[in-house]
Image 1 (tube, rainbow, N blue to C red):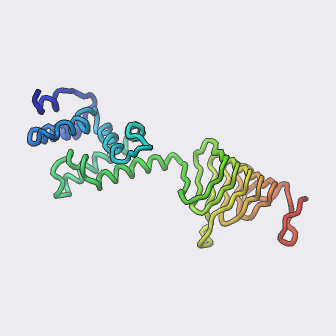
Image 2 (image 1 turned 90 degrees about the vertical axis):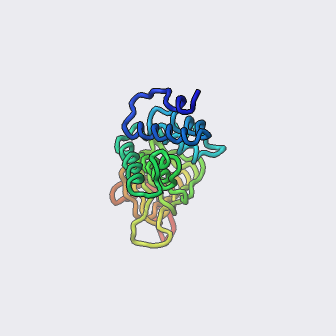
Image 3 (image 1 turned 60 degrees about the horizontal axis):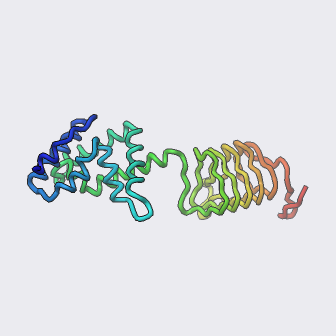
Length: 249
């Protein structure tokens, strides 16, 4: 069977004009360089959409022995399939490169080889994942036995510290107040419960086994084994501060 026959033998559903053009370019390339047949079959022809081809190609670039290309490809494709704006942006990026970059000799060349294009698409995937509303900075220090329930809306900033056996409910933020520089994020003790909608802001400490009620905004230190509620948060039950020491009430 001829190389060109291989390239054009399958018919795929739901093909848009740009995807058809990419497949035509692949066919032309194989006629000029038959050695590319297997590569194009794997990267282009075996896929029924631009999204599938891009998801597979990004996955091959970003996978490693502990993170399989198949898993990444499925994740990327699910993101592309769920979001019309991302799909349109992919096509607009390809068209822009073809129109404005003299080095871009074809759409298929850009899709498979332009690291700027591929980096931009990797960003689009990362951005969609970030918008799923779990934003935990890799610089945060988090202990063991942590429960993040539901997770939606959880934000943990770079300098935050979380002890062991902490329970975090949805829409919880450990952030800064923008009034200080340097170490500006909260320090959460062991066994703390952070209720839904809680905002703990600034370089303050939440003592061991404290409970922060739902919707509380905490701007001051909270003593151990206390319960704090409200906006701004007030101590409901727990120790009192005498001469800078917490005394059980």
